Structure formats: C-alpha cells, structure tokens
Image 1 (cartoon, helix red, strand yellow):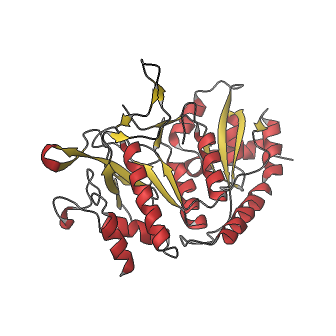
Image 2: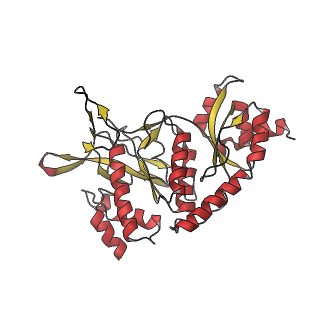
Image 3: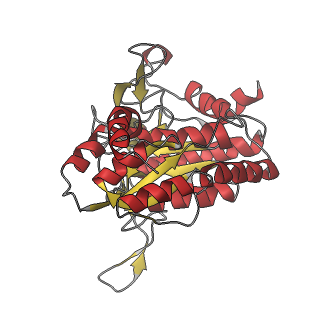
Length: 209
Length: 132
C-alpha cells in the first residue's frame, strides 16, 4: 500500500520486497503523474521472469483516457462498476478506458483497456483511517478504480490457490473469458466494460475444464 | 575510459528505446547542473519462467540470478555517474534489476548509452486512484 509521498522508487522497492517474499499477485491501485510507457518492462519482468500477475487500476479520468501504468499491454487492468437502483449494474462515470496501439509484431494492433471491471463505488476501504470531527479514527467508503482492482486481485488469489500450477496467463484468460458483458460476448472487449464484470465461480469452473 | 562525444551521440539514438518521450522533454528543460532522480533498469537476461508459476526455491534462484546479472553492471554505472556528478541511491539492484540514481540530464543520457541499461524512468510521484 502506498500512502503519501510515494514515487516510482518506493513503488519498485515495494514490488521487489513482495516478489522476494513469494507474492504471486501485485495489486497496483495507483497512477503516475505522467505516461511512462517503459514501466511496461517492469510488468513484463513480473509476468515472464516471476510468473506474477500485475493487477492495475485503469484510472478515474472517464471514457477515452487511461492512467499509466494501467494502460500498459502487460497490465491486467481493472475498471470500476457501480450498483444502481433496481440492482442494475453500470460502469462508474469516472472509470477510464481507451484503446491503444503499441509497437509490436502485428502492425496497428489495438490493445483495449480495461481488461475487466469489478465493484468500485462506495467500497469499504482498508486505506488507513482518518480522524473524524468526533475525534474517532474511522475507515471510509471510497470510490475509484483503485477500489475495483483489489476485488480482481482477491479473486485471482483464490483461483491461484485452487490451481497452483496454472500460469498467470491462464488465470487472466479465465477471468476475461468468463466475465459478463451486458451486451453479450460479441460486443466485447470495449472501453467501458473491457471483457465485462468478473464472475469468480465461472472463472473457477473454466480452469477446471 | 569513456569517449564522451560517442556516448552523447549513442545516447541520442538510444533515446526512443530507453527513455520515454515525456521524460526526454523534462530532461531538456533542466538546467545543466540541475539533478534529477531516476530509476535505471538494467539488463537481466531472458525470461526464466515464461509466465509459469514456480516454487519458492525457484523464485529465490530467479531473484539471485537477476540481482547478480544487474549488479555486474554497477561498476560501469558508477563510472558514468561519477563523470556527471551523480550517485547511486541503493547499494544493490533490486529483484527487478532496478537501481535508483541521481544525476544531471547529461548523466541520464550517458547512462542510457550503456549496453547494460535497458530503460531509465524518472522517479515521478505515484498516487492512489480513489476519492471519498
């Protein structure tokens, strides 16, 4: 967790610390001040060298934008969904999403972000409590793709626990393929829902098959 | 030990691959003696797991291998930092092959020209993406 005064250096120190202690998932509920495409190389090392899944918040800058490093092709990027009246599920207005072209073997290949969405509005957060006017320190309900990303990290952790041999690509694929898009599978991925709202039980079943 | 002119020329050609456009623009705006903090990503060789998960012992072996590969480049890094009034901000590379440094804009360009260096990132602020 990064609170106050964090920089890329402190972020990398934290990632390195976690990797050395055996973390299989790095949750990054964060964004940089400006776009840094080369951070993708850090994510590549996590995936390719350590078999670690980097789950990254996509950003709170609305449709048509993406935060860095959530915009990286190798980030498993998460947008925020919101429960509306009548149990209707919508994408939170602030949740970012865009399609980007990265240099690669396939010319003009689009990378569509986010990859999936998860609850990201009025989430009871574990961010350290603040002092209230009453003098009591209390945790808060918070909004943001930073709140959505840990839902995906938590589900990925359960899937990894159930299938310890499954590579990170299979975990990510299971989460994407079993996600629910309200307009149907033929409409995905898009820049609001990505592949859709994660469905943990369906992802678990898909890994079994 | 180093040919500065060649280093600077090489650095310019290395820019698109090793330093992002935004960081390059920010370096251009620095005064000659102004220093910037950055993260040097060192070459750590080819993928060992290709996305597959590994046992704890194998993870530790990978950490050691990456650290040793990256640390082998530190003498070259130090030599270049010394030329540009810079300094290393960590004793060793981390498990990702990264080393924080502080130096001038010219120092950053010179570091980018080193073969062992695969990328240099500015030590920019990071914030949580939340609101109450």
